[in-house]
Image (tube, rainbow, N blue to C red; front, side, top):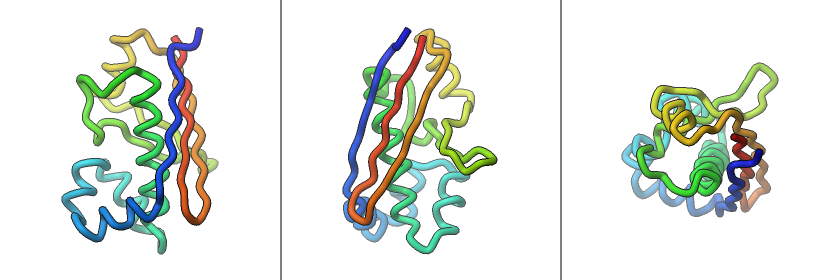
Length: 123
């Protein structure tokens, strides 16, 4: 049974500006250390940050809010094939169990100007 669906669209330029203005403070507030390491290894890191930001927002929408979870707790990594997936860290896993969510599906895409993500949570 579908628990929730979330979608988000982010202007990549907005994330790029936040990174320039706030730098590491913005990174540490929103992204995990592993996400930061992944994004920083790319020439256009802001594109990858934007995709992850959109995925986090889409997830929050799919569960109906951020209560009990920090943005850093919602971690997106890549599996062996390069597909973005949610990492099951302690806080994230706790929220899923509290809400009876068994599966989380994620799709991320981007153009030169926008990053978008779709999340479907299943109970």
